[in-house]
Amino acid sequence: MISPCISDCGNNGDFCPACGRTMKEKFEWKNGADEARQKQILQDSGSRLTQRDFEYWEEMYELKVAEKTREGNG
Image (tube, rainbow, N blue to C red; front, side, top):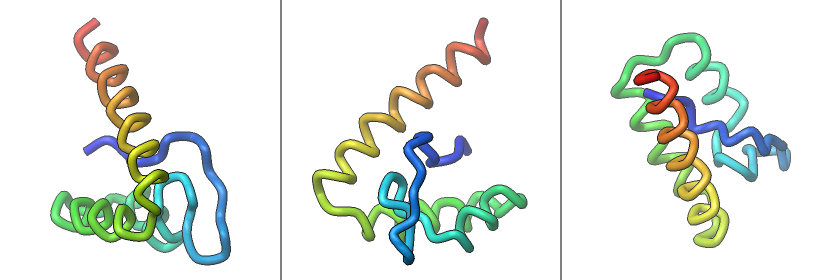
């Protein structure tokens, strides 16, 4: 699964306002969380974002996935 990071990182003290993940979740993802855990992280992180922020993240993530898919097929 492609990382939910959209390279607009920050930390408001609790979570990244760009992807919604906590620092713990970022480390878990980077260190090989299994697919079930990754799906749970995505669900949890999305619930932390405002509707507007989630929509922005979703748009940027879709672009990232499309780009990674093109790179893999090129």
